[in-house]
Amino acid sequence: MANYERAVCKDGFVISIQAGSFLYCTPREDGARRYTEVELGFPSKRESLIMEYAEESSRPTETVYPYVPVELVGRVIAKHGGLRSRTPLPPGVQG
Image: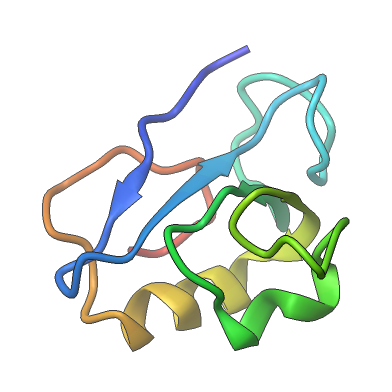
């Protein structure tokens, strides 16, 4: 299972974007050529675009967001100005 570094956006927003066999993603396997849904977690602040996926919506910065479509992840990253650096992302996620 690959562990990806937390994604840091240009405006300072930080979030974990993960995919692999033991995570909430599609396909649910390590080393997939392309993921269509990924697991997000522990954002640095509440992000309205992903709230419907929150496991614990009352704790938006302390929870996991399972099976988030990669297109939506791209919108979140774009909303926050793009990535600050060229952080590797799961295949299929556009930074």
